[in-house]
Length: 294
Image: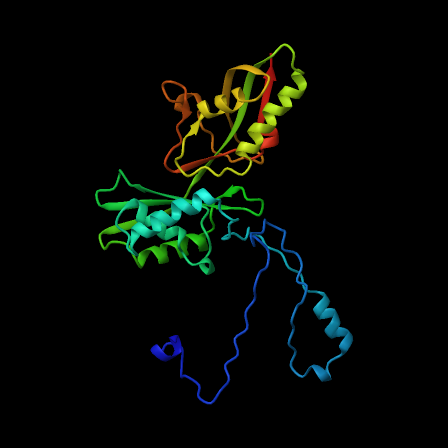
């Protein structure tokens, strides 16, 4: 269709069979971490007049092929949960293929064709420092393990090009990296006198791990400490939960973003406020969640 409608692709061939070759992935995610792409199982070499060449040298050249990726390969995401599908479907229906409201822009980002890459989470915020209708679009991708990472430049360029097809003429958009706030949970519960404390501690920890193992918080979504209290108090053998503390994990395998948890708690201490340009994440639930039984 493109060949027929434009002259930018050259002259349309006639009486010719057009063969299109393409590659396909069968894995659930094609994201690759740095230095992980080191093999090319079926390399294809083409030599001029190969019949006249030394076959041993040809094999040596083919065997010398080395592959490496200095940057992570991003742009794919794991299967989203049912609640996310329901929310995105509702936003897509309301957007009507144009970008006017904040929800419209978010819906468009999630509906970008997969061949251009996929965004795991996004948020749109009005730029308070801009005198015009400038919008800041914050994006997060995920790595091969499903954890939040900053998107690469290609993905951000593709998102901006896609958005430009639908945005209002007066709107200007800056596509930026979202921040990652890694959070840990510490809790203290009182056990019933007839309960094995060690088994109860493991049960409480396992329940929180199951709750947060596959949870991906939205950008700007608060963490409700009151929910953690409720989950722990529902465990048989727990008399009461006396303390739940959220701590910021930074450096090493965690994000380098340092966040003051105490300064960003709500006045009643029921939830932790998260900035509109950041998303909370419990990176390693099995080690980031710990407790004490009294």
